[in-house]
Image 1 (tube, rainbow, N blue to C red):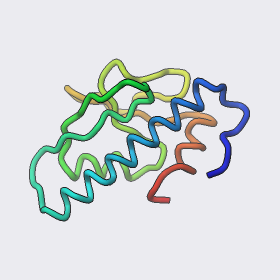
Image 2: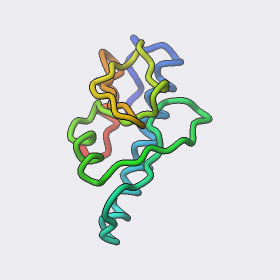
Image 3: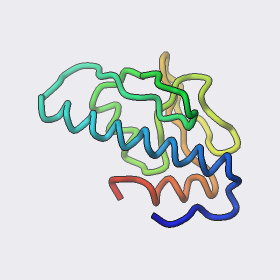
Image 4: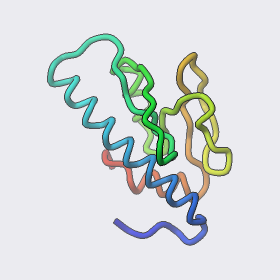
Length: 115
């Protein structure tokens, strides 16, 4: 894994890495659900970068796949978005779809397990 660009400060760097870790966990959840052919809503971890966040969001497999179609997009709980590194693309009742911007977006794509 290459180091983050120096344009990101240490807080932003930690935030992007935490989000990427939660996204990897959600990838495993999605794989297990696919293997067991789970239908309907599934609890996924909030992909915010907060160290202590263990909140979940409920998404269907197609909703999750729509977010994952782009390597710089994440699903977070409302109020967990951080304007310095992301912008809100979609607002749903229990979750937001955010897109990383600038250097954070570039790094998110590099850390994307699907790329």
